Length: 203
Image 1: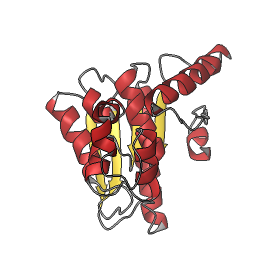
Image 2: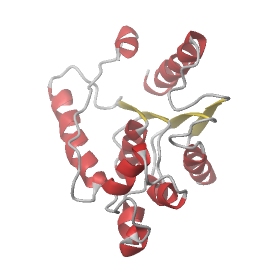
Image 3: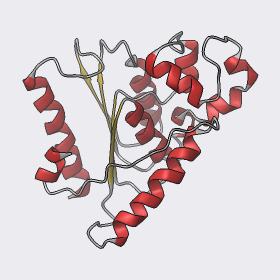
């Protein structure tokens, strides 16, 4: 946040309550957009130049937002998981962020029938199925050795948007895991790319 503020951006660190209804998309939209409205109402924020950023579950949040609203003019999703169906079928739905994703989609971790009990709930909470109306330019960042959220998730988002003629860039860091932080040089490179993306799209 300090890096972005240092480059002249106002930063809202949104609070999103944990969704227990099995509809994280609704929870995200109902939480973030009113907070954006409040920020704009201060008069300090230009409503025509809003960006959004998220990492891991925050990346999922970014992917959800840009597939359900056109308010943002630039987005950065790092190590996100836009395909909850793929998460489940990939066998990662039992631990860590994958368990959270399955729970959020309404499935029961450890019960293989979760997806098939209510498949539409998984689809409806997977941003990758709602790419057609995206207008927000998206920068995807992912480590190719991420064992928490496999890079295939960002590949799906990238290829889907690219095939629809949307503005999307994917930066893949070789040998990097979920944190993309093996060295100070790597971390600096990540944030230089984020700031450059916002500068290009918003300034």
